Every structure is written in structure tokens, then in C-alpha cells.
Length: 201
Image (cartoon, rainbow, N blue to C red; front, side, top):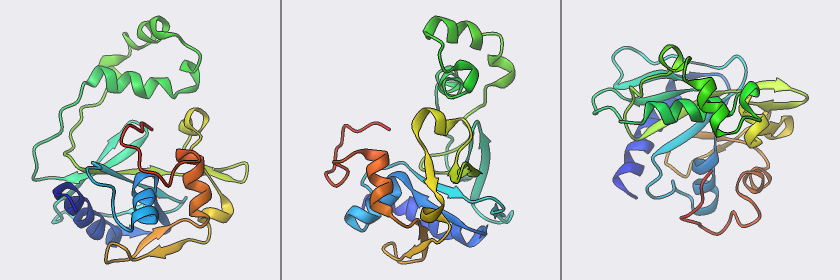
């Protein structure tokens, strides 16, 4: 287990105690647990999905911080130097998933972004590694992330997340969805069982 994996594991172990309601681990974290029984080496984030009504209440004395960041929230360590990102590129990535920008070419997107950038862009006031928190909404019998689902297919069927399983591979309880292999195939393709270091979400 890499140093980064150890930190993510410690962060997750603390964080799950502050979650009130139903949540589940998915994406790369779920892939690692299901395929290898551990987190993926050198992964620098985990993704947790919250069902409607679920809240996170981190006490002030915790070393974990939380930051609203475009379509999600970042859980990070407050005592570590903040991660440096390109604010302009991060903002453009956010705009690309919005309905009004879906069919724009690069020139149109840049023209649209320029007058809005200073008012809408966000500073990356979080450290690596981090945990992404996504709030799901129920729509057409599926749980999804608003806007993001339309572009990237992030959706979970009711029978996958309304009756969650518990995984203990990390040494503590972590909620995961049902029908894990169907979800991983949807997210990573037919070859999800074979590690691919070149894969990009």
C-alpha cells in the first residue's frame, strides 16, 4: 500500500463516522476494493455518493476540511499544503458539463467563459489526496448527479443503491452498492477486471 493509499484510508475511516444517512463508495475506490481487495496504487482521490437526505457533519476539532467545489465537495486535510491547479482549465472543465455548453466548440466555450470566469471560478483550496463528495438526485427511477450524468453516464439504478452492502476490505465498514460488477462495467468497460494504467475517466 502506497503512502497516498494509507492517507486516503485514514481519511475515509474518519469520515464515515461523520456521515448521517446512506452513502456508498464508487468509481476507482470501488474498482480497487472489488478487483483487488484494496485501494488502487497511486490513486489520489476517492468518490463517495450521498443519497438524498444524507448529510456530513465534520466537527471543528477534526483535521478534515470540506470545500464546495463546482459540482461536488472536497474532503481534505487541513494541515497539508493546498493543491495547486490551473483555475482556468478547471473552470472550463466545469462548464463543459453544463447543458448550455454541451454543443459548443472550443472557440465558443472560451468566448462564453471569459466574461464569467472571475465571478464564477473557484480556488483549489484543498490538499492531496482528497475525497470527492457527490449528492445524488432521484430522476426517472435512477440516482444521478445533475448535469454530469448527461455527459458522462453517471447513474445508479434504484436496485443498486437503495439496498447497500458493507465492505470490510480496508479494516472498517464502507458502504458499497449492489450489482457492483454491472456498475464497474458501465463505468470502465468490458475490460474492467484488467488494470489499465493509461485509463482516463
